[in-house]
Image (tube, rainbow, N blue to C red; front, side, top):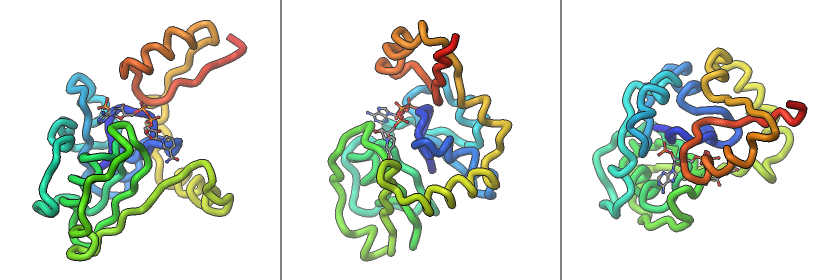
Length: 180
Ligand SMILES: NC(=O)c1ccc[n+]([C@@H]2O[C@H](COP(=O)([O-])OP(=O)(O)OC[C@H]3O[C@@H](n4cnc5c(N)ncnc54)[C@H](OP(=O)(O)O)[C@@H]3O)[C@@H](O)[C@H]2O)c1
């Protein structure tokens, strides 16, 4: 269960977990607040796309086990609800705070289901780990899907596209060609 239309891969400079996880044989469920982008998320590898509102309210400490693993870029109630519905011994990677920095959870998923909450940090991550991650991307990422994720613009488009980014209207990653 990875994030939605944003750029982090999964979100976070690892391009899209949807593509990688589906290629590894997992059934991937995407989450997005933009129903019009459902087909896009499916083209990246998700078989189903759920509305993000299903995860954003306070939930129970434990719910039905649904996910073998998850990549979360949202934080707050979304991260808490994902942990509460992750299967026995599943792993949740927390790498963002698009929905908030808080984590209103309980210890129940961790002590009753052995769930692991793994932190992802792309800034201080040691070089050997980075090399391993990029090697795995070389093996596990369908490079044909990079084109779906990437939009290239010229330098003079950077300011208007930045406004669209802040309005949540940009999907994937934008590459600025400073020579254009
Ligand atoms: N751990 C690290 O090393 C690392 C590195 C880079 C970035 N990050 C963090 O990762 C997060 C995502 O970065 P990004 O570059 O992918 O940003 P992004 O392109 O803006 O994508 C974030 C996505 O999160 C969803 N979202 C936005 N606001 C939300 C809300 N209130 N509730 C639920 N979902 C929401 C949106 O998906 P939909 O439109 O599909 O709903 C949006 O596309 C950020 O918090 C960023 O700071 C972490």
